[in-house]
Every structure is written in structure tokens, then in C-alpha cells.
Length: 120
Length: 112
Image 1 (cartoon, each protein chain N blue to C red):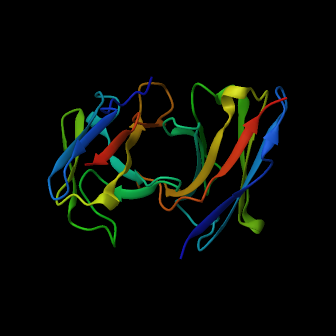
Image 2 (image 1 turned 90 degrees about the horizontal axis):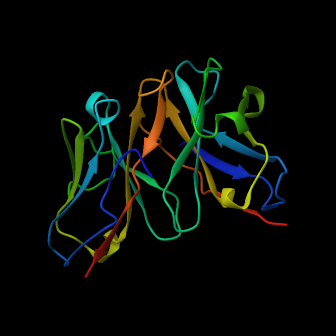
């Protein structure tokens, strides 16, 4: 059974850097083809894909946020970390991580999400 | 503004059928598989349909997906009050040099 869980600060100040961790079980990021993605959802708004990292360290980023995002993996800890710089109140959202693979075209399953509020 | 266009809302009575459209272009839906996600109130999205028309284990056959050209459609028959949720389509987009994932703007389903 695959599970994922997001963790990180619930409140960050404008201009600060956000660091979120996705801790997963039921699969390994050292297995060929496996990937983990990050998706966010502002309150009452739509899903927005942020980034994706694969077992071979191939990384994909949202073109509109690429300059602010960094995704890394720690295979030994079964974790994926997303950092987003220069946070703004418009970045207030629930952030989800989700399992994917290089040969599939979907995200499944998803973590429960973590709400991050950007406010001074 | 989402790359994939969905109607903001749809509604139907219990027991009826509803369809939700997802319109894109040749750089996304036209050349890639589409997946659909159901997000019940206050919960994380859940995969509903993958590869245009396949259902994961545990998803009832009341849910179906199809794709034609640059559009995809989610169909739900025998509507139940428990189907009230937001539904999102998603796929890869290759309009730029590096493919990126895109979601539709979401459709709120109300079962009257």
C-alpha cells in the first residue's frame, strides 16, 4: 500500500522560503520509473501542478514557477523535498504530494495535503 | 487561466446522468492521455479515470471517460448525493521545450 504525507510550516512570512517534505511508504524512489510530484490548491481554487522528480533525478517544473522551485529527493529517508523561494500571500494554498511513474500519466495516490498560509 | 477548459459547474438530479468536458489542444489532450480526479469536500483529490477511459480498482463503472481529438469527457451515471464533488482533468502539455503537467480549472458537480 502506497501512502504519502506532507509536512512543513503552516505559516510563513512574505519573502521567506518555504520548505515542504513529502514522506512516503510503499515504494522506493530508487526503483526505475518511480516519481513523486507536488501539486497545490489555493483555498476555493483549482489544482496547480508544481514539480515532479523521478527515480533517476530527472526533474520537471511548472514553467510559471520554475525560477522559485527546487525539488530534491532523499532515497534513504523515502522523502521528497520542495522548496519555494520568495513566498507571497498568493502562495497560500494546500500543498499535496502524489505518486507517479515515468510510464503513467496520472497521480495516484495523493497525500492528505498541508495548508500553508503566507502572512506577516 | 487553466490550459485545460472545464465548465465551472454542472448539476443533475439523483439517478440522472451528467457529463463534464475538458477542452485542450494538440499540445496536451490531443497527444497525451487524460486522467480525471474527484475531490470530495475537504479531502485530497482521488484518481477516478486514467489513460482516457480506464478505471482504477474500486471505482464503480458508473464513472466513465472518453477522449476525442483535443477534448475529453467524464461521464457519471446513476448520480448519487455522494458524487457531489469537484472534478479535475489533467494531462501532460508539451507546448514548451520541456513537458509540464496541467490541470483543468475544475468542475463542481451538484446533485440536486
